[in-house]
Structure formats: C-alpha cells, structure tokens
Image (cartoon, rainbow, N blue to C red; front, side, top):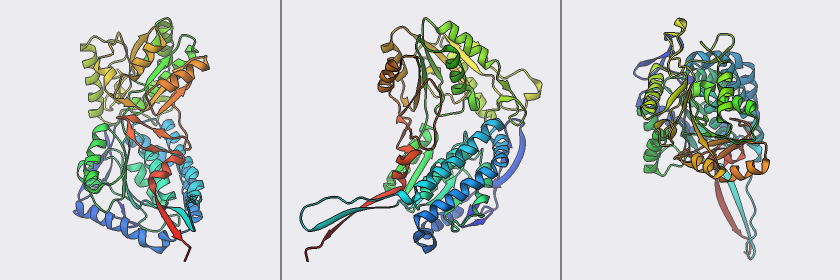
Length: 477
C-alpha cells in the first residue's frame, strides 16, 4: 500500500489474493489493511494539510503537478491498461480508453487549480465583504471495480486541484491499476502523504475510514447499498458526501430515428464493459412501429462483437469481474424469464471451451418484458437489455421515468424539437441525444433520485472539494 509516501505491507502482514477473472489465474497478492494501517493513513492525511509544502503551495504549482501526472499517465497508458484489462476482465481497447480519459481528467483539472476564486459582495456602509474558497481537507475516495483507474482519478483530480489530501480505497477485486498508477506520483513534486492508497476490505476498512472524524469529505462511486451505508456512518460526524450510485438507463427510440445508428449506440450502451456500468442503457423503450427492424439491427450489431479474453485482438466483450458477479446477473435473467420475459439473444455463458475458466456471459436481450419485471426494475450490472414498447411520447416518458434511478437516459430522433422536449421531461441528471453513452472531463456527471448526490467531473465538482468562508471587514474605525 502507498501510505505516508512509502510502500508498505499491512501492519499484521495479512494479504489478499487478486485474480484475473478471464482466466481464473492468480495475478498478485496485495496488503489486507488493518485498522492500525487506516489510522496511520488518517493521521498522515490530516497532518499533511498543515505542512507548508502543501498548505502554502501556490495553486499554479498544484496545476503543474497535475499536468505532470497527466503526462505520465498518458506515457504509461498501455502498461496501465494491460494491468486493468487483466485485473478487471474488460478488453484492452476499453481499458486503454479509460486510462486516456483519466489522463485527460488530470489535465482538465490542472487548468482549474489556479481559478478557484472567491467573490466580493456589495454590503451597506463602510464595509468590505468577500469570500474565500479554501480546501475541504482530508478526503476519502471509495472506488468501484468497474472502471478502477478512471473513476479513481475522476475524484482524485479535483480534490488535488483544490488543495485537499486524498486517501483512495480501491475495490478489493481490482486494486492493481491504481496501485501501479500511484507509483507515478513518486516521479512528481507532490509532497509525500498528500495522496495515499490503502487496500483491504471495503466493509471493514472502508467503513472505518468513513466514520472517522478526521475525514472532511467522502466521495463514493458504487451501489445504492454502499452509498447508503457510507452516508449512515458519515452522518455521525456530519461529514459531507458526494455519491455516484446505480442506474437503470433507458434508450427511447422514436419512429423517425436513424435505426442503424441507434442500434450501434444501444449496443455500446449495454454491452460495452460487459454491461458493468452505472450508466448502462439497460432498458430499450422503442416505438411499436419500429421495434422489429430495430431489434434486427441491434442483433446484427451485437453478433459482430467478439467475446473473449480482453487482451486478445478483436475482442469487444471481455469477462465479467468475477464468477459471483456472473451468477448474480444470470439469476436476474432466470427471474425475469420466470416473470414472463423471453430470451431473444444470449442468456447463458458462451459455448467456447477456451473461455470456460472465465466469468464470461453472452450479451442478452429480453423481449415481451412487462414494466414490472425484475429485469426492468433492478440494476443488473451485466450485459442484459430489456425491451419495452410505446405508442405515444407520453407513454415513453412514463416508462423511462418509472424507476428509482435517474442517472443517464438516451433519446433517438431526427426531430430536435421532440428531442429537447424529451430531454426536459426525463427524470435523470444526464440525457444523451442520438448518442449513448458519452461524457467528457468537462461535463458534469450527475445522478438524480437514488443515482446519487452531488456531481463528478466539470467545474461543478470543485465545489465539493472546496468550502466557502465569508469575511466581513468594517473599515470605519
């Protein structure tokens, strides 16, 4: 682990095994942190905020460090992507895109470091009133396993830009790419202890860190259950949290849509990363007049997607993150079928004998699905698409909004007026029109309802990692 600027084993010497889910092979052993290790990380995160080397560092210098980290991330992108592909099961192609997005995120927030500004506020009398924006403090970052490095850096970058200290807790299944990336930090001028990476049990160490009064803010990307658990312990110290949680995205396809382009976007939105995405478009809501040709186009498209070990040439769908996750997804499919859904495509592991040791699952499309079906209601986190139909736009909006989640929805139409009307009516923090899914470092990533609190990415993310102080000066003496 990377604690206090040093690479350390766990205090008690315990380790945990990390596997390649595509082959079942042991990749590495990493430290299984104790509460003593967590205490050391907490003390360091708090103390470094008082260290002049970080506390008094100019914001432009922070920006230069982030820019150097961006360059190093770009330069080592292929090495990092290989580790992530092997540890997570995703394709090397997708992992490489994730790492480069992470580098772009560092570069974006590097530019913001010296633009975190206060304001002067007109007030009556001989007074000057102004605000300061100061670092939030010691921050905890709880990171999921589906995009291990990209989603770590998504919150680490604005925290560092704002002058905070960081403790990053990667998922137990996928810690390796973040640990490897942390080695790059030693090649920069970031003061020792500003960034730390601790590995171990999320239930034990993650919760222990979250409930500490030494933590000033918590960023969580994960399930609703994880977010609710962290909120509960954070409430004991009134620690602010930003949560990016689950989703049940819908692609609404109008009768005037370009069906070939829509089919590609629909496949990308649910079968990319083997469907293990909070913003996955797991529901297809298609107009009844075009559902048959659309499903034919979707089926033709996904049949081109090769399933296999992510590091092999031409593979588009890699392994799920674990055998347990595959079984969870299959159990949802079985439940959905028992409730009346029919399997149009997939629904089982691939037949290829060379893949039998991995956690692979064929892309699955369910039709004749009732809106009350479990596969429509619950986040599956796998390559499973449920198809619904509508006759009028109002029905499409009702179906799309009939969920406890509200992260990302898509609209496919050639009528931009209808697109903007639907975008306004859909109850989600993000809407993509004629493209799905897509985001950039500069665009807010926002969840409504049970999909989250607060925002990641963009200028808005800096608001969480800085706090405002109001100063009133009476100069009438």
